[in-house]
Image (cartoon, one colour):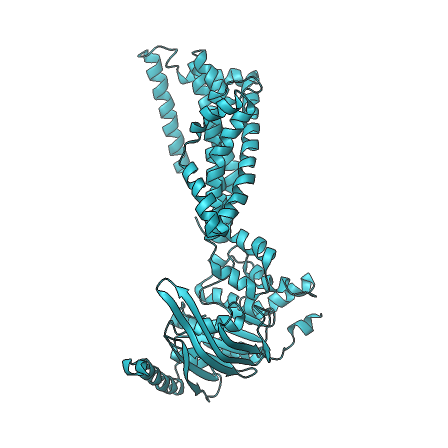
Length: 268
Length: 253
């Protein structure tokens, strides 16, 4: 495979989650993480899952990633059931899941080394391309612990993008960062998404963040985890998290979330 | 540099004090030799090769015992880490036996093996294996699951996950365990050499033992110095570079 082919666009996937339920055995008994959840995501769509902790957002993401299997229902990617984890669906995790025994380039190369048909030189070129894309080409051989929180998540993004997946899943990737670093990353992520069109599933508990980034915001509620309401976001890109339009829609979604989480809503 | 000078000055003062007390003649010279006498013994033993021979014999025993301890401890550590069953069986036994000072294995070793090399080897292995086992199993169990999950999404599985993710992630624990195992091996061997007095090889512990038998206090103290020096040297040469590497990469203490 040539470098151009490797870096070339891949068709983003469509995802269909159909009537999925998943429960866990925890110390306090069985937790219904997801109950009868259905969700369709179009090719190249940027969908944000919003909800309080325990609403099953991360569980849903793990099911699509193939790290877990549903108890009932099916998860289809491009029409076929998810067979397990695969390089077509990459995950960027909440806390830094970067490997401390590898340097920045080593981390990005990890997934590439598992990809067949790539020469060592091509792998390094690919890694360099993505590290440049996230603005870290000045830190190719830095150790992970030398990076700031924002830089770590940039490396994690480069690592997730490097195998050129069709789907990118992000599990509260900016949750632990300070507001200024986050705002900068919102802009960068939108730009990167324009350059490397992927289907993105973005999990967050920050409604403004969801509105700023997503084509669609999906609200989930806990006990049991369910998809409750969806909002299309028809705002021009690139969006600014501080803009009034983003704030206005975030307000409406927050109100809906509050209504759904109110005690009266629980009785339904 | 100032701190090193301070330490050296302190040690020099300590030796000077010792010399002064010895010369004052409070105790008999054979029981309380002056440092000058100890150093002159070290000089003689160094010159006639006794010291070098003994050190080599000791280091060879240590290397064999420690290697055996590693070869047994690391795989058993895997067993203890892999399942609750392994933890409740192998792990439990290791936890119990680790509490036993290795010198307590000596009477048993002497009855089983007699005054032989095997008896010493047995004591060193028993002193080493449990702490290495426990450190390996702790290390493997404390690998953050998120590393394995991240690796799986990138297409890693089976043996690849073990060699490229789990083992490197557990490396800092392994090194701590290896260092602790080495310290135990060293202590065990000295105990074994003092008690197992054989002629198949004259180690530092045996020099110490015969120093006592011959009432040669200068020899006893001199050999004690050498034992301290060997212990420090191995730590400096074998473990310090490894720890520096870990510190640079992982950013941990």
